[in-house]
Image (cartoon, rainbow, N blue to C red):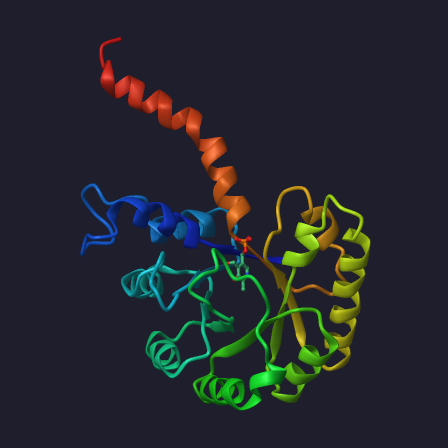
Length: 249
Ligand code: PXP
């Protein structure tokens, strides 16, 4: 059975679009609450909740992570940049796992994999701190043999293959080639003893292919699930508002 990690960042993006200046992250008019959605996702069968505390705090806030820590009944997978400040934060919050991702302020979402091979010492330091604390480390990397070798060398127990290039190629001629790269990457990683997860750009259509990735352990999905929740929820939301506007009618 493939596990599902639900990424709730986009709910916080909607909240921050309106309530960026507010001290409160929940309560009163401040909505939606990503932590509330995490609870609902868990009840619906999510195997874990993925949450990315970005350096610029553009969506998830520290308070969200702490509140999630209190209420989560599954697992928290904290996506984070490979920095001393984030390492300190993770060691305080103690998520079940951290996923190390590259971060640049300009990107809309995480656009490329972490360059593990190019910054081994930096990544090693975080891996060792997490290992000592009993927190699993996942490295978000492209399906690149050099990066997979580096992840194995650092004894990260998990990798998350970046599926963005494959998802972007879905409607074009390079889709087969991109999927073949993921398959080769998954095989190489398994041979090196790594657990293989995958994420980025997975949706209700392309999941039919990515679920066939050999031995894939967990898929982390955000955008498409939050988008689907908006579509499937809009009818009920409108009906409820209409009923409150016209309680007698
Ligand atoms: N996995 C990682 C490491 C990510 O950075 C992201 C994007 O935040 C996701 C999975 C989820 O991607 P998407 O929102 O496209 O499903």
